[in-house]
Image (cartoon, rainbow, N blue to C red):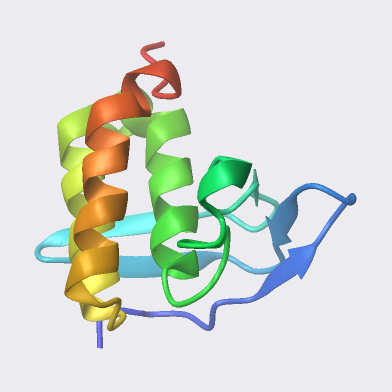
Length: 119
């Protein structure tokens, strides 16, 4: 199993969620370590599409990992493209269906440039 820690996420401030404990996940040979206290909004799905894909669900762990990589990618040596591939891989490992997985992956590849932190 690629998860090395229990996934412990708590609703935080009416908008965001926070990890209550460190969370580590192996993707291939890469260890992703997200520290306790990391805040995120889960999947950033425009309201108009939420009847198709919600902000949370079987893709939640992938969304938290992806948010972390987008905010910290350059600091830890992960490009935007690599972060998106990790997102796709984690969704597959977590059992997200093919159609939903591909739709979400294509969305981050198309629109992710607005969210990825270069610095």
